[in-house]
Length: 549
Image (cartoon, rainbow, N blue to C red):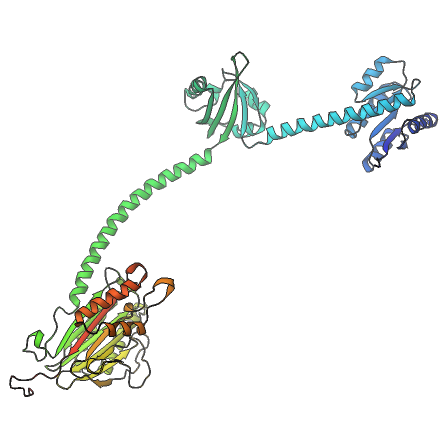
């Protein structure tokens, strides 16, 4: 294995001595590189740019100037051992040379190759050991002084024996020396609360350890902070207490945060009580609003002819009304237009809740005002849209509303209807076992109410046969999400209605709602649901079986 040569810097101003030492070095070591410089300054310049293992410094005379240069070399190149070669007759100067930083002192006249080799290797070994100790010491004090936590050692009576930089910084002092010089009595000078140090000592006497001892203390500038102390008692082999040592952490920010949290919690508690009271009032108001909204719906159905009981009416009605919240954005009405005609209206305001419910209240009022136009569904929807747009435009909050309106004649079964963007009702022809979605004759959809100022709405017409059933509904019935994000659909709705058609209308509606609920995730509807059904039994007859006039 190849070994790197020993690199030696020889500083000597005497050529003869330089030659002699160089020869001794080369005879003492097989691999040696000697660099010669005449002065200490020149040697230091060489050290700055080259790697050496040792410096041999030859001094012509034993004087103060030589000692100064030895100190200069050891100070400027502390990583290298300095071996001094000089006059050998002055033992006092030898000690001074070593005291000035030289690793060894060799007399010029007694210099031999073995002695030189031994001295060089010993000086290099000692220098390596010294550097290792210095590094270990620096590491220790580096850790000690750069910890975030303060470290202390105190007597039982309350005098500091040791402190680190972090502790001085926490307490507001420039250095540990200033801290220990300023605080002579921890109990009287440090703690804000009287008796706090005594409590500290009492707990230490009982347990020998202490953790999380929180106190308020004065800093140097008299400001108050919070600290947390961890401590242990140090005893000798006989159990005698020597001192306390431990750590200190500044917890002021945490304490301030805890106080803010406490105040915020108290404020939150008060706010919760206020909110609970407001919620209770709002819930009461919503219950009242729900009751009022329910009274806006038909409380009883008209009979046709007017003088017959409901069970003998040509038209028989049924409905189901389920708001998603306390109040709903769905609305329907069943109104007598004449002794032989009935108007059936259903609408769905976008969204649900209070805002949508307010719009349904406006629509109900408008429906009442527009009774003169009730016989023509297209004209009725046009007027309703115009008035609704005028009202909503003034509020700056347009609300889309779908609607369907139909007029049925009990004598002929004629059914006139108009659609404003609403789901197509189902005309179920029981005798033919057929389902007909009521589409506009034009085949084109018409806009929902509230979108445009005055669009035309078409009146379409069909004829109901005895036994036919007209089913109107809002989109909340089928816009339902099931497992795996599968959506219920109008096609599935039609199929489920067909499967339930043998049931009376009221039972059909109840079972249909149960079927959709079972499909929905969570078993609930996401939107308001409204269903209205109209059964047409055919033209009534007299007891003799002849048509009534």
